[in-house]
Amino acid sequence: MEDVRKAKFDPKKVLIWEIKCPKDDQGAVFGVYSYRNGTPWDYESIKGIVFYHNMIEKEELDRLTKFIKDKFGGEPAEKSSRIFFKGSREIWAPNEIADLAVQLGDNFEVSTELTIELENFTEPEQQESNLPSSKILPIPGK
Image (tube, rainbow, N blue to C red):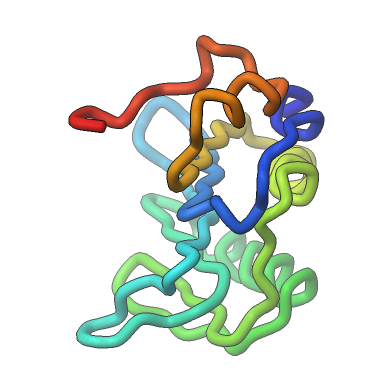
């Protein structure tokens, strides 16, 4: 997470970030994410933070829902295995995303895997970002 916390890039270029939190090797996992242009809900897009879950106990889902709502606000709405926080505050700065990943890891005793997708991230921006080149993956066809 230190790589991301120290990274320098324009937060307006972030298209999506995701913090995947595997609980065990049996498939129990949850993830917190946000899409810049909103997350699809049927035929509309919902702005705000979202989390998905698989094989997570209800008690922990309730705790995670409270954690996200307390931190970002918004109205929780459940659809299948996702909980949307409609109208929640969104974060895009590298240090805020990294801090959230650390807080999720600490509060829910999970490892975290952080992914950030940037739009039009030029070669000079990549070099100035302080991100390790091994962490910057090209988009095929670009």
